[in-house]
Length: 187
Image 1 (cartoon, rainbow, N blue to C red):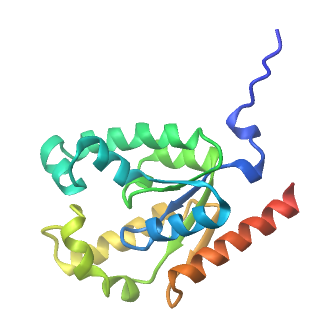
Image 2 (cartoon, one colour):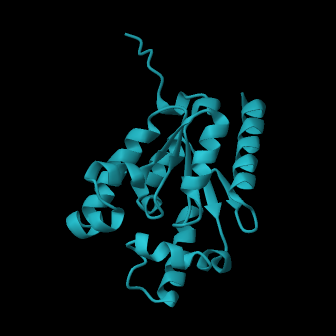
């Protein structure tokens, strides 16, 4: 018997879902939405979807069911999303730390790492700290250490873009243009 189903690895490059990774507050959601609009694709913000399911913020979810349960929910949801075609998916800053998520995304999607320098990122800290449970109760030194530790994890990607000194529209245009050029080259 011949199996006519297409495995995820056989999905044409043009149809693969695109995953945005990077440190919290780098702009994955904002840029993801813009890229989704430019490419006429559906956008999925993983954290927002989990918050909708539990009807509470990520901070409240961490307090109520714990980080471990949140991470398991996150993993299951991301793996389900990455099996779909033509999606733009924004991962929470800590999701890519899970090896299973990282490997699944890299094997089945196009992974864009949105990078930012510490100096540029720390300018955003005051607007991020209340909504990011991982930042709460940490000193600036501890947050900087976390920032640099996570850069190693994000180094597994298909493409990287330094977002310093670029606005969201410039980043989205660059990514969209890069994808279209790659699709034309490799199709």
